[in-house]
Image (cartoon, rainbow, N blue to C red; front, top):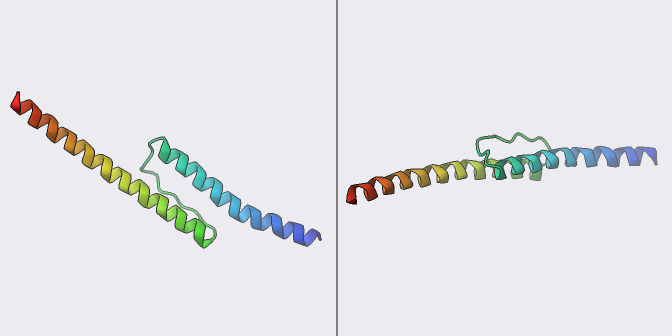
Length: 82
């Protein structure tokens, strides 16, 4: 019985640590830190989720960059018409 309980705690810890790390990374992304790269070890699904969050962060950086460029172009065009 003690071995089973110990095994359950080890498995739960193996899953919960990466999930907590992913949760923290998601909160950092929500706070605007899109540059961080998430490195997580764990089950396949957890590492896939980390990869997906990294991809999402990279896409957000690209989209924000394009929006800034577009905004600057519009400001220049608007300034030229005045």
